[in-house]
Image 1 (cartoon, rainbow, N blue to C red):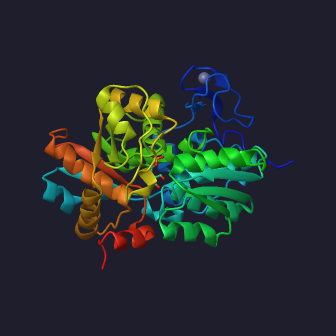
Image 2: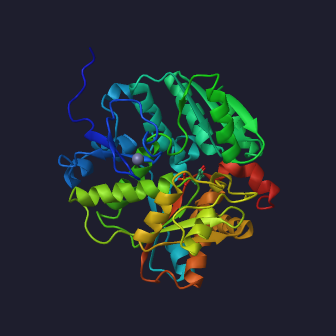
Length: 399
Ligand SMILES: Cc1ncc(COP(=O)(O)O)c(C=O)c1O
Ligand SMILES: [Zn+2]
């Protein structure tokens, strides 16, 4: 028998975000069997403290917060060094925009150049802990590449379905790890459908966004890190490029856990979703006062990662935007390209188009008077611009 350190994870139960039923996390779970709602892990928060986390080096990455992550036995962790990314004070950009306090959480420093590594590392580790050998995922691109890498690292098989017009460099990256890759016409919605079809003949565990409870756990560590990096304070505003909503909901969940644990005080930030003009189901639903989003027709945008026309957790995203006093804004691809250039030139951070969308979104918020110039604002750059060289070149951003 392997030695399992007691208290490595304080995971206690899973709770349905829709009907409130609870489930045993010792079993392999997907969504709520009763109502189809998204399941959220809950922890015993007692043992955590500021000094516990502060006493650990950033080189531990997101595993610095292992008590609040679901892996019971550290032997099961599949890691490539995810998390522990810098929060960059963007002073030059701030003064250009007339703001006092602007930061970029730069997720491009993650393995595979993407924040996706966080969710995939935690979800794959937990699936392996629960006895899974093969995993599958539909992806707008980046989660697929991340899963391909982590599956290779773990020596397990991964089936990845992506839209055929996913940026070529991302597909090729996923291919480099020799995962099984299937390209389909359409968006991540069609990729998800294809994965469901495959389930009839191939056995694998489905790691689709919010169809299992643990990808969000990796993402919530962005919230833990931002809080500690700001000296255990919360920013006033967090701007997030929203596709499936894992990062937005994760950051909110992470900050909420720190508040419940008594190690973070003050008002929760206003959460802002940025979407593209070509795919904005959340923006539309928010504007119309709806609690569910309608599937967005003919989704198109250079920001492939936020081309998610029908997010499964729409009701949670909309709930958090409203509860936090935030909002949802959309930006054109043209503005996204300008913002990518501006972030690169002004701060030396060359963002992926999704990350650039947060800066374009911030400009929109300033124009609409929705942020105060004295507020502290965090933009989440979800990944590296270098992964989109082909797409950027095609769009005329690069020579
Ligand atoms: C670069 C990038 N940013 C943002 C997102 C949106 O992810 P989510 O809203 O699920 O956190 C994605 C998803 O594919 C992505 O690849
Ligand atoms: Zn339920």
